[in-house]
Each structure stands twice: as structure tokens, then as C-alpha cells.
Image 1 (cartoon, rainbow, N blue to C red):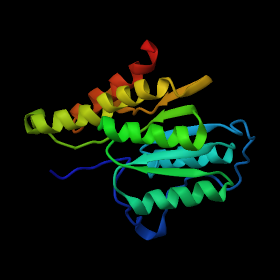
Image 2 (image 1 turned 90 degrees about the vertical axis):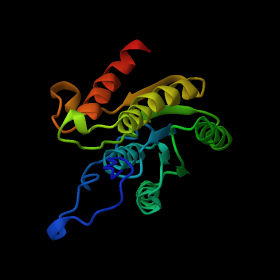
Image 3 (image 1 turned 180 degrees about the vertical axis):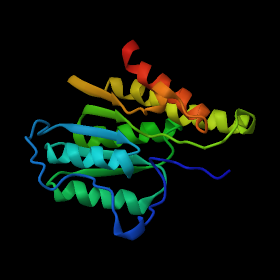
Length: 198
């Protein structure tokens, strides 16, 4: 199955030398997150990468969970370290309990706890008709976008220090839908409701 994975996709060379702006060079951090420790799922590229770099500019150390793209993950680590902060790379499948346990063991060892959890990892598989969405696709989309997010939140609750924060990224499709991202749009709506029940 060909996938379009927004947070764990392979790097693509932008057309005509146009590159996404991860952080504005003239943005001056205020160190509001100085000394904080942030775990970001899907933090290797796209929005997750931008979140990592912004938190780093604000003074936080970063750990990113990513599935397979070492090149993007190493680039994110380089950008975080350029801001003078530490970056831990955690490669694996977020849907596996064993991997999440390994991540938290590493964080306990390195940091003795967390201040911020950013649930950003997600997948999408565009299809033009609902009839073209397989059971396998539905399961995979909900497993990464919803089940893994809830499980990671549950696993991290005991690690979050007093005053800790949980952030969940979502999408405009959560509110207005998308005719070619039917299952993805549904998961994004659930993500937007997740924090209300915590």
C-alpha cells in the first residue's frame, strides 16, 4: 500500500529551490521553556520538526520519536543542537508498547522525567471514494493517529512533572473534512477532542 505519511515521510526536494521555513531567523526566543524537556512524536519532519526547533529556541531539550527517516531525524537533531539544546532520537514504531516503554526508559535515564508531550505523529492514505478504503487502511490510520496517541499519553502521564503539558496537533480536516481523506479526517476530529477528556 502506497502511503503518504506526513510526519514520517521521506524528504522531498522542493521545486525551484523553494524550501519550507522551519523557523524564522529573526524570531528571538524568550527562554520560556528553559530547562524543560519535551517529547515530540513525529518530530523528524514537517510540523513536528518545526515544533522541535521552536521549543529548542525557547530553551527546551527535545526527544523525537520517528519511524524510519534517519536523514530527516538527523537534520532535526542538528537544528535543535544549533539552538544550544540537547536532542534524543528515538526510532521505532509508536504503535508498539515495547517501543514506547523503551522510549520512556531512555527518557527516565537521560532526563528523570518530562515537562511536555507533543502528540504529532500521524499517517494519511488519500482515497477518492470511501469504497476504496480497505479495512487494513482504516485500522492503520486509527492505530497510529488515535490508539497510539492515547497509549503514548497514558504511558507518559506518570513521567510528566508538576505543571506538565500535553499538546495534540490536529488538522483543518477535523472541522471541515476532506473528500479524499475520509478516515484521516475522522481521526483528526477525535484528536481534537482527546484533551477535553483528560
